[in-house]
Image: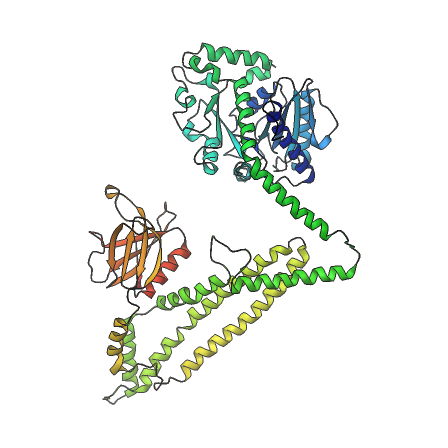
Length: 632
């Protein structure tokens, strides 16, 4: 097809994709490859059905109140001498009466979704042959709704949204966004959804309906000239039949003549009349789809060949397959269990065949728990110096009894120290729980390859998770035993023990020989509390060292904005505001000085809780400790 010249060759491209569409639909494998197509998106009553019927020049779509389109309709238009419709699910039967086409769409929809007004993403494939159409493939999707209608399920809005996104998020899909002219374009449901997956407007074609229903003295010239909310492929205006015309069985051909007359006679649109209307829309869609298929064909061909080789390899492996042979089943089972074991080990030890680039998982997450979360939990422990001094005083007095002692008794020291050591149990057990949770998550990820054997998958998960839980109990016993050992005998002769006489000297030595200006962490953070008059909240590239926190314009670190020394700084949690999705913490000076310019607090915001905890753990390593109070 690619070697043929324009004309037949270009028409052949759409026909080729239609044949592939049918083949994949028949196999039930439509999602394996992203076929180039045009998805029609619009809110309820936007005029979507009328646009499609005008393209076919026939009434053939179900109509009514509520959600009528409940399955995607893959509509393939083929230029031919005779006119008839053909469904993939009843191939061979030619529908010459388009009322019967409508009835078959309704019956086939109910067959899959039932009579309870549910929806399904399994498409209906309809091919229409006609001398009045240009070759085209359109996918009619359910209308976007905001409120359940009648006996519709309450979560129908989300189901429809998910189905639409399933189609329009594919790079090979052009989006036909249908919006009525008598509503605010900025609030168009179709354009909002299109913008989510196509923010630059490169794949979206705008269709403006109901131009004849606009208030007197207003027009949509700015939209149609692509000046308001511009799209790379522009907007096309159409005038469909009114509900009264449809009820009165007004002929589509007569409606299209009326549409042509409307554009030629309207003072705001007559200068662009040749670029408006249903015939022009058909022509543009045919050209756009043909060009789109031509542009995406090399990548599509490469993916198809790759899948073909993979399937041929599988076929070769099963060439001499004897399903009744028990040794083959045993071998397959052992291979799967062995593969599970290898995958689990790789995820914990590293060097997995599928490296997660979006988040930490497996061994890397456990590493973070040990080196960041556990130290952070230790420092988070409640510590009230005033209360501790009071406890020490009472302990000394109670041990001396009626005597007035000269020296601090060892028993008082041990009583207080043991109480502090026991507090380690909470953070230690919490870390075990976190590691346990990550191991269970890792098991679930590794059993995904066994999904074709649900029973085996379930049993593997159950057995391995049970074994991990069994080891969890033993681990907790061991951790508690270690703490009890430390509590039972405090060795003041140990080289790590710091006596009162050496404490101050040792502390100053440690501070001097700290890690110098070593970089502890780099990353993006938002400075959250800068007023709008001074530029508002802004994202910067932060570099944390053992001595300072600096931020730059970007990660090239060429333009330094500020360097904040860490002396006398502490971290406080900031309560999340109702409107904000960010997680915020604040740095402040313990000597009540301004931290940054004339700000008493420097609020820093992250997108995720885990990211915020990680930054706080890094600040802890740099000697910036958390404060117990929170900032509103």
